[in-house]
Image 1 (cartoon, helix red, strand yellow):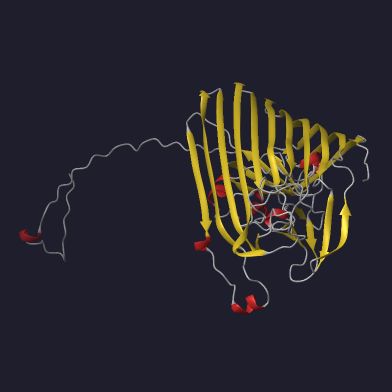
Image 2 (spheres, one colour):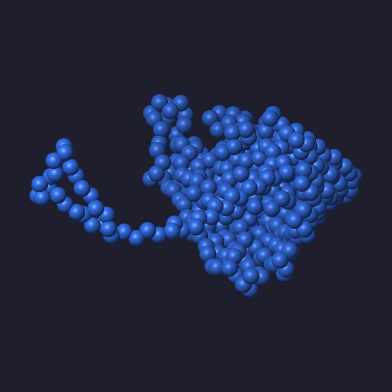
Length: 496
């Protein structure tokens, strides 16, 4: 109990101003407090190097408002020069080449889980990998050291793996003529453009699903992609004389604008098995089918390159059925400092080629008009071709990180086997060149089905290291590469 009194001057205060306040309080010993200070040293492994990489996460890939062509993502890297403009997906292409720092246009490589998806060791091929369901997309722009196969940029698609719960996504996009403007003014029409490029329909469906087969041991992740494109070709119309052997001129039907069509289908399945805590095995397979100009065509030579224009019956198809790619990979962190990995790839294996459309007769001789208002128009018929090829890869590496070092040693075996295009011509093996409707030149093709087979192998060994001394980081690599001489078998040609 505490007493408090208040007084003024020397005289006692009246009773009315006197009071006693009672305060009840418990005085306790304060609680014991402990402070734990955790200190640690910075890692000795150098995380900085001259390697220039940019990573696009899977979430960014899924959310970015663009097409799911891989060319749409090469546009996002400022240093890369892209040869195919497909940012909005309005021009779905078979493939897109890219380069950097003034390099060759075929230096850019598309990798799937670290292995080349290009044709015969080149950067790209008719096989176009799916991007939308990637775990991440890694761009390596420079500083690849000994493990890099070229000095150009690399785009590595790291695929998703299944987990212990079922999960999936469903992506759909599309557009049509109602969402597209038209700048075909009277002034433009007066200059000769009577019909502009326009989209009839363009849509894509891309579902995915993953989950456990055996919990904590075996998982799956599968995707499917279906895309179609139907676009009107500027100032190109269906030929009224198509399929008529008695007619030799191009007579456009102004009521039927030619359609540039394309269809793409792709299925992918990944199985992930972890037999022990330090061993993981991935098996992944992809099958892709594509068919361009299979309904009509008329977007150039039938290959989409635009060198000349063709009426629908003068455009050969551009088909890829199928393209397959299969990979098996193994990883094992033997110790916290040693990582072993090995990969094998079968493919991409594909049949690529073209054919005359079923609705047209192979007995008709193709014509190219070089004069008048229909300059460089191919019509009446088209030649076609066939081609098979596959690329097999086996590679392995050991990464050792003892502290200040980050060393890697590896090998790579690359085998190509292909049949060069077999060329097929109309029954008479002829093509006429017209000038203002009058024939003035003829081309005669030798041999109905010439072919050339090639086998080529490449073997490489490499070693590289990144070493940190204080604040100084050193890195370097050595690569030995042997390219085997190609073996060729060439069928004899006969001139008729």
